[in-house]
Image (tube, rainbow, N blue to C red; front, side, top):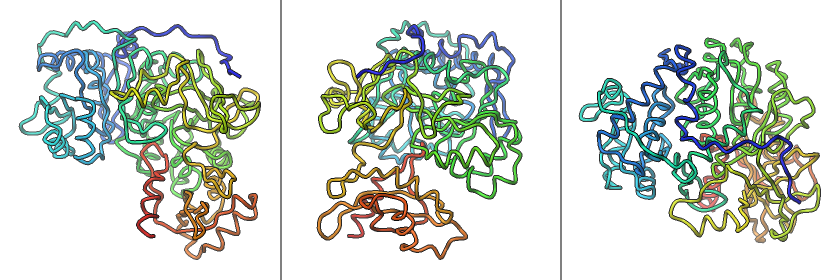
Length: 525
């Protein structure tokens, strides 16, 4: 069956993203838009509007033209939004780059996206220079701060070049070009149009209202679509204040909440885990917090409840989406009292969903059964850049985007079980790693955990746990772990092997990098 949203449809937003977000900047005027959470630098809405227009003018004067791709290679800074919106106003598509990318990884993205311009920061300049050499075709590298031999964004702000008058087609022109592996394979450029991103903001707004007076802490990276949407586009569209941190460091994060009286945080599960378990949390005044939203990876219901209880907050709301969906499709409304634990919410406006059978993807799963989640709506990506076959595998002829995630629906609420490609097949039974990981995190001696499928001496795929001990649990053994799980799951779900590690490899979004664990496993065999 096709699931429909219970919310009223929204009209597609046919404005360029810079106008969709900053269209009311003049109205907000001297209200603070951005705060550097480290040094206290502030940017008002009037300044943000002026700055991004001056940057657009300077980029156009340097030779950037409509259709060019600009690579934005930076951690979170108060300059990031001005550069992003300045580039789109000048007619460019912005490909956002992981600030920890190696020169070789960066060069691959430059080549694949055909980027001609780079904006970076001086600490990352050598990587950017090397990437530009490897990729070739880069016209110029700009910096957000200061570096000899490079034009600074700061100098652009006082320039006199005329503002470009670029005519954009929001339905066709690409605003953002983030890179995602999708359901499988190497990272691919995800073509997100101005309309798909802006319309998704309108779809999400009724469920995540922000406005003047709200103070949002931006610790998840802007280069990731979650951070770009929830921590940059959405709050700046509504006149909230965004306090910016360059990376997640627990004590800096907690101190920023206390100092800036943050009332809302949008995070990933590892941060929820730290808030629930880390002793440092007790040393800070977090009483200004009103709500927490978690997304980007599955969040266990018990962990969410433990975090809410410790902080004295309403239940943590979850959201669901992916880069290829601009990114949101589901969200638990703020203050929803009837949301069952563990749900990622209900369909947002103008969005349809199917749950496809795992045995026969051409058919729908029976009501209440688990299956692959498929989405259709105005937020669906235009496609993968230069990869029509990959696009065709992801989006079918009827416009359904097949997410690769397994879910089930209960009374309209979506529950995400795991990834199709990450299921462990133990003697024909399907075992979801996320379920076992959530269970492991309830053990008082476990600080973090990840589960992957490995093969035993008989060629059977079995669940193996990688476990990080709590500091006070150095005597925790493999037998302790296997016995703990065995008492709580069906026999086919039991953990068969355990390895203790110092840290679970995770992406900045919080997703477990299972590929790195599989590589580790291959090296050890």
